[in-house]
Image (cartoon, rainbow, N blue to C red; front, side, top):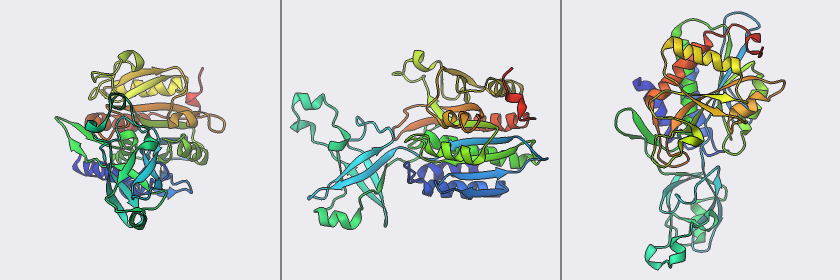
Length: 357
């Protein structure tokens, strides 16, 4: 991967962005894409829109979107001893949280803490077999009492899991937040590659970094309404099934390093799917395929049914260990997704070509 692109990816992943608290990551996204775009704006929700003008008039509008928000926690209560109780932002697994290092993002900056747990020596058999509910878990910041804790932390502060960008063997990397900063990264790289290509496309391109996907596809809904695109490509992550404890019958044959995933189903415009598939074949870009017979739990869902309807597709990145602090992807899959989307954009010629016949 290009050195500058990898540096951007690390910076994007490091920036905290639980749903509703995305702006540290959005600032990173805006800074990176601005040189490649004709216009960069942010709406009242916090969605970022990066526009690249096409060649001609009345061009098809294409929206390529990845959501910048990640799962996390939010401070709800401080007890008399200075321990912090919290709620989940998005789908947080209560199995994983005890014993984790966290950062509380206070007005004064990031404050380290740890999620405490009763020692196994003090548990009876029943306790050892029971998952402690999130509302019963707590964060220890080292405060002596409530008064001291309140000087450091405010109710409503966002919390992220401590996680460093880690290079594994080959091109595999691990971090928190790849769901869906992997998608945001691909969107940014699409904008960069279009600019690097030196020729204007026959489409009006909008690269969007959306917000609040993890709590109900909220930013995808409002951003699509604002742009009113003819074509929408959502860049997301999907479950890799090449780890030992995942059933392939649920999500098909999906592996890291085997290329981005193209999904088929009711949420996907068949002609847009065919365009992406044909483009991958022509450009010799490896892709994988999955099936989803219903609305997907992604921004593609709300894009498809915005206003009078949008021709929608999903380009997904294989991901291991979703919603953990060690989400793992292949850098090659990220690069393949960006190249595929750019090549497909160059083959779009009209607004009408995606009407099923």
